Length: 218
Ligand code: G3P
Image 1 (cartoon, protein in one colour):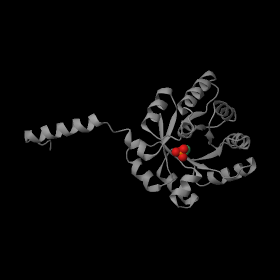
Image 2 (spheres, helix red, strand yellow):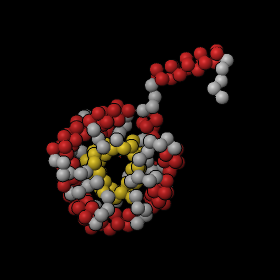
Image 3 (tube, protein in one colour):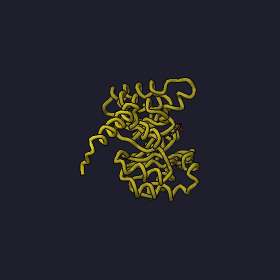
């Protein structure tokens, strides 16, 4: 399972890269706005730090505009992945961009049928939004499971499931159990995954007992 960091904050990417756990980065217009930085500069900086795909989202709403913006974004760095919204225009742009050899992440997916269309259009990644479904009282994990089952029915569909809008360690556990290919997560959730109270208390006891021995390894 690949882990992408869901952020447009460069210092956060730098911090988490050191863990060796980050395979790529996803951004969106809201994350760029939150960072307060210029989009092109931010994407260029992140791409220079990360070897894997860095999703940069188009803001045009017609397919020609999305293709033009996508081609422009792809010139920033080789590892830019063009992110387009799951609309009919977005699917048409996906088809054009992928036919031309550009990787595409289709975002704002909220149904299995949308995911099926994205795969048919040749998307590299489909991004189902778990947390936002939970927000409206629909179990976001059911969508990940449905897409996994559908894609597995048709091995010719090569689109990878990129679990997105992940808000908790529970979302990560379930995405991994279902078999999402990738998850994009905030740095906090990645850090929280390493935590367990028994690890903390166990370590405390080990260190306290070790101190009593008066020994040192080095
Ligand atoms: O990758 C999509 C993500 O940024 C959306 O997350 O928490 O705004 O629903 P959220």
